[in-house]
Length: 237
Image (cartoon, rainbow, N blue to C red):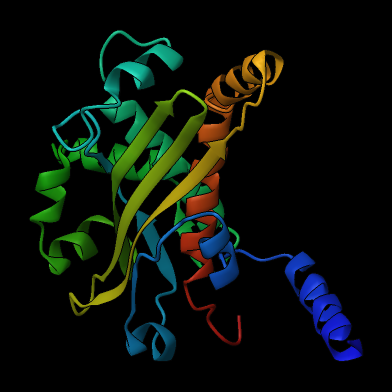
């Protein structure tokens, strides 16, 4: 009995420690399945000094996440899909988290100005560029591509779910190698139980209240924080 109590206390202490990434217990409890992660050994042995977070691309509104569009637009007071705006919001959230690591990051506004000067406006045009082209355009050793894969509001009476998906890739501008890849989705579930008319009314209110845009913003920050938490910190910096 004492051993069980000690283990429980140790688990409680560890779980209360600040973390940037979810544990297995977190994912099981929150019904949040694992994504995919790749770390090139070169990112650890020869980490880039300067990184540029390129404009992101949003797949929301392009046939990937159609069924939640009307709820999404209604909650954000939009009349049409705001894919570019959403991609920029996610990009800035990721940039804010990445800036906490000991790399030198170019500010997105400066990157956009340089791309505009060269007449590069689309994500596909960026993706088609060679490493040598990035080196001549941006004074960095690595660039980050990003895609917003999910931005869902799911509503089912007393059940709601917020889902934010992000696919990221860091490419070396020197070798063209993929240094790091992250593909995951954060899911926040809300389920209420109604045993009488009063609890039903309260449950409906709480379920609807959980769909506030601020909660989706928090989910965006969470997935960006977790993505950055999987980037090895350069030693000696």
